[in-house]
Every structure is written in C-alpha cells, then in structure tokens.
Amino acid sequence: MKPPTESFDIQAFLALSQAAAEHPLMNHRTLWDNGFLVRLFDGPTTPGRADFHINQVPELFYQLAGTLDLRLWDGERFVDHCIGPGEVYSLPALVPHRNRRPEGSVGLVVHVTRTPEQTDAILWYCEACAEQHTATVLHRVDYSVNALRENLRTHIRAFLADSEQRTCGVCGTVASAEQGAM
Ligand SMILES: [Zn+2]
Image 1: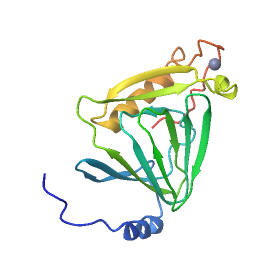
Image 2: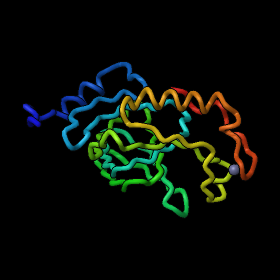
Image 3: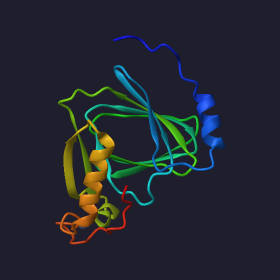
C-alpha cells in the first residue's frame, strides 16, 4: 500500500468547519483507511439517538472542538464520559458505547482497519432497566462494516418502526419511537 502523499491540516479543517453556517447531521469524513481508519466527525448527531455500538476493534477518540458525550457499559454499570476539546479517550474493543455529538463539535476517531469478515453490532438497551444499573438488550443486530452508514440507517429505522423490538422483555417498558431516525 502506498503511503499518503500529504498530511492533513486539522486546524484548517476546524477553521472551515467553524465558519460554515450549516452542519449536516453527522457528517463524517474519512482521512485514511490504510491500517488505521482515521475519520473526522461533525456534530450534531440526530437528537435522542439511543443506539449503542459494539466494535471488534479498539477505538481512539480525540476531541477537537465541542464535546463528545460518550456513554458506555463497563460490564457492571453505565458510565458517562464528557470528552472535551483537546481530550483523548481510548475505548477497548467490544465495549458497548453510545456517542452523542452536539452541534458545532468536531472529533477525530481512529479504529484499526477492520477485515471484511469482522462484524460490528448495533444495539439498544432498555432505559428503564438502565436506571436500575441493569443492561437489558432490547434489540441487537450484527452487521458487516462495509457501507456502515447505510446499514446503520436501515437498522435504526427498522427498530423505530417495530414496537416489538422496542419492548423490554424484563420490565415491559416500550422504548420511544422518537429516538432519532437518521
Ligand atoms: Zn426494562
């Protein structure tokens, strides 16, 4: 594989991004995918998006502007991290997490490049059970990471459209269908 011909000027990108009047929803831009998948993500995420993700590879977050609101399940409880500008966070593989990005935020995300056989998962937890520090999965889909965005959109729409997928098998709470379609 040939090495990149140029470096990427993040400060120039940030200046442009901050000058832009409109930020498209969850705009992301791939800088490289040559062993490390290196991407920039712009906020805002669709308000209320409740989907969590499980990746087969570790993930590094470097927040450049605004915050990244990261919720994860550490195996015993849900933990919230607010990662501010200039802060970095390393998420191990297989840790369920949810990212929310406010408007005007920009963050760099680095994954190890996944192989075509690797699958990620998108899943939803019951929020009523989460209040009791219990991780009850409402629905989970394992999918190929190719065409990530299309997959995500399809799975999120299917979840929101199906009240059975949104019903907790433990406490019976039905998750809202207004959880931020993409
Ligand atoms: Zn529940």
